[in-house]
Image (cartoon, rainbow, N blue to C red; front, side):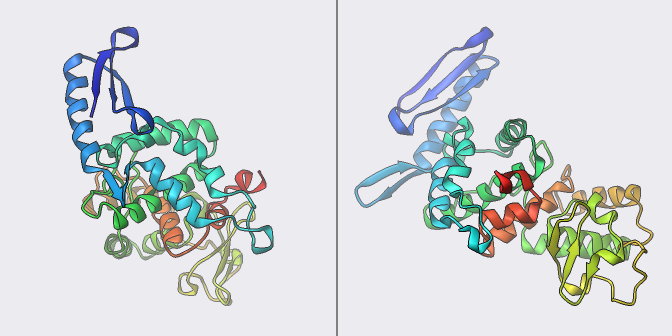
Amino acid sequence: MVTRVRPGRDGTWQVAVGQGPMAFQREAFTDRAAAEDWAAMATLAARVCMVRIGTKRFLGTAAEALRRWAIDQGTLPRSEGGTEIAPLQRLAPLMADPDCALPLAALQPADLAGLRERRLAALGCASEMLVEQAALAAALEHFRDFHIPALDDPFAEPAPDGLCLLDEASCAQAIGWAAGDNAELGRLVALMLASAAAPEALLACCNGQAEARTGQLSLPGGQVVAVPSGLLPPASAPAAAPLLPGLTPAAAAAGLARLAPRLGRPGMTPAALQLTALAQALAQGQHLDEVLGLAGARAALVG
């Protein structure tokens, strides 16, 4: 595979690997040695991620994984609660990001953090960005299962922005350890993993916003999410009382911060619980439009 290391802009260095539709590049290396090191890694990654189906060969990238996953999702009609915007169209700007052209073996947590920063700036909405990332995580898992099962998951460890995905065992541990500190903190973590809601939204809820019989919780702003009835107060609970009594925002933040090192993921932020919930919803068969609704990304749904 052809690799070119050359001077870039402002005294930096850039790397270009491959030719044609399978080409990719990275810029802004501080010196030639760093560029050459990355070039060697990326070239090996490209060999690892070269997929053959019959006589066809293609490079396994995030863009390729997203494209296949989005096509499989299909378009959800308005009669079924969808937006009639094809996931392939909705995810096109994400697929166009330069890091989505990298071989999957070269895509690292730090790359995902940079990708998220760019997408957040473009979208102007954290919930939409998280849904995009949940779709990317689902697409990568599906692609790895079919084509490169030995490949590591770049979402498995916290990126510099504190985001990652928790597996099922880690979710159970997070709830158990939080409950060991404080019963309401454990319920907060369980609610976050069930609803993908931010801790601030859940702490602002009162009992009157919950309906244990139907398993529904109305969040501030009118969004309604489905949660296990066991996490909600009974109908006899005082309607004006807090949903999570005695748990202050400061105590919740401190408790959530203590979870990260206990789970072996130092630096993990509470948004990782929300991202995990969104990715789980997609893995369980929900459509991208439905998960946008779950995340409260109203602008995307209206658009």
